[in-house]
Each structure stands twice: as structure tokens, then as C-alpha cells.
Length: 120
Image (cartoon, rainbow, N blue to C red; front, side):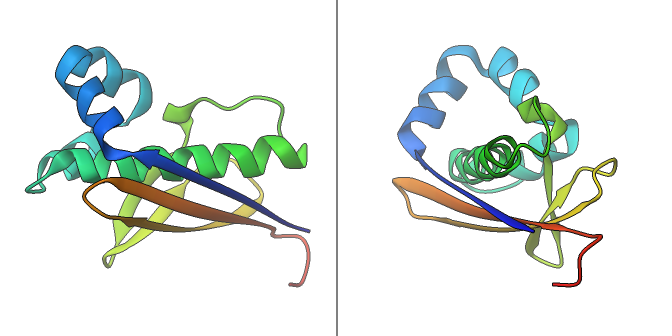
């Protein structure tokens, strides 16, 4: 089976969260490696927004499919692999592919989950 999830987020919303409660927000949503990656960029808010949208897209695909009943944002890690975002959730028997795009104002992501036991 193949499952899909999509999310879009306003960069300004993420920027406001970073300004108002940075430590709590980052530690609740992102892993240390994600924080390090995004903070290394010229405009971290854009990259945090992209990762946030990516995590939401993965979460929507997983939960709406019934594959799992609960997942926290921090359990979904998105790191670059040769400049392509890669989802890291090692205990899942699924392949997760993700695309993230952003402008100065919005970030969007689509996640596709493929059951590894099927030949797709």
C-alpha cells in the first residue's frame, strides 16, 4: 500500500514561535541534529518551517492510514542526505519519501509512505 500526506505552514507562524518561546518550541518539535542544521542556514525560520511541514505531512500519512495510532513530532526526524530531505524513523517497516519546498512566506511538504513488504 501507498499512503500520502501533505502540509503547508506559514513561515511567519514558525518565526513567531521561535521569537516567543524558542527553547520550548524547538525542544518539543525538533531533534538536536535538525536544530543544528536549520540554525546553520542564513534564514533558519524558513528551514524550521519546511521541517515542521514535513513532520506534519509524515504524521498525517501515518495516522490517516491506520498504520500507527500515535506519533510525536520529535519521533519524525528529517535530515539532509546529499541536499535531499530524508525521513529517519528506523523502527518503521515502511519507506518514507518526502519533498519540501518553501518561499519566504510558506513552506509545503508532501510525504509518501510505502509498505516495504509489498513490491511497488
